[in-house]
Image 1 (cartoon, rainbow, N blue to C red):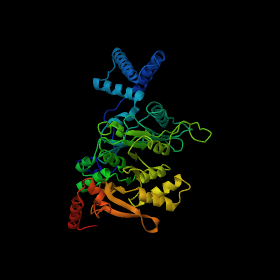
Image 2 (spheres, one colour):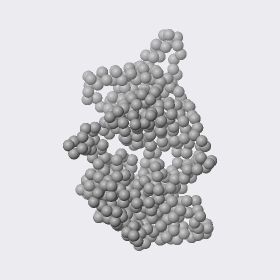
Image 3 (cartoon, rainbow, N blue to C red):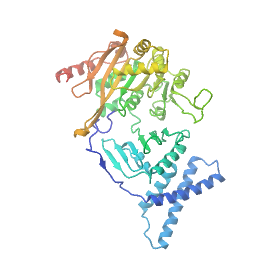
Image 4 (cartoon, helix red, strand yellow):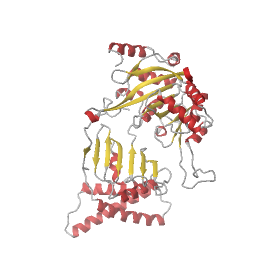
Length: 471
């Protein structure tokens, strides 16, 4: 979603530009200090293996400070230039990040303006900023081999469970401590590949999106009523469109007393980190399991999204929200939507609101061989109430900008002709592509019952007609 600036739009920075790091650090020195501190820390852990993580970090900072003090003394004795106070702080933070953080990546992860980080090898690194700029920065490792070692260190230390990145397991996806998602690939690509997608905005609701001009007031009021009316909602869009952000904003419209289950492959909604808004959320995260496989061919310790959907049903929750539907978990989710009290939601990669039903039906059939196309479409049509589509328009290549906004809201009214869902386009793309009221929903009474004023639709329709209608 367009939540980058006061207009809700990202601004082009022109072609991809080169940017040198503003505060260069002597990485040879950092490596030496890190090796010394890490060795001393390992020796101390042998003596005190029960040392807490916080105590380890405090001890590491002391060891790093001692190492820098010794460096200063050595240089003073040799008559060499000593680092300034600012240089000492930068070196200390770099050494600490090498041990407990993301190494040279840490400053970018700490920068609130950074949205994405991608590396095609150790020295072809790009930072995507919230204002739309893609900036090339200095290398994040000394070599590709060094980058792989860093990724292995990150996988072993920073995940909720220890992960591996080896020739036998060349794919890595994990959640970082700040909630960002890291994905890396080695061996199957010419050079190691790395992407970190950050979740910059956590505590957001529909009013915030209106203030950012990501959506307008009539659409916000309609979506708020949809949540209150316990409509089953599917949020669609492309990669990086802002589907998770919108789902988070919708979740934050729920009453505090709501008992909600969220199910994700990797935590991204992070509703459990907002206890004031969601004190009764049950947040499930899938588990990949180890490299070993049991007699049934499954990885030992693996817990799938499908299993978590089924587990959620016995946890006394009133709604089930699935972060993203990608595979066989589509069928149990559709069953939850179809048979439950309503109010479930998910995100889905789809190129339009109408295409969402094709994707869902295909995923249902992929997950259950016995599900026929007719059965899949009929179940999807009876389960899904609304599809909200987020469009991404990137015109930076022609001197424009990148926009992300809701372009459609489609209501599903059961099975129509040919066994396909019967759809009503409640909000359609307006002159600028953004969603404007088109038709009243068939189930308008459900929305009015929870406080929705139909005049929000009338005002939007009248404004659109006065502006000349559809392009």
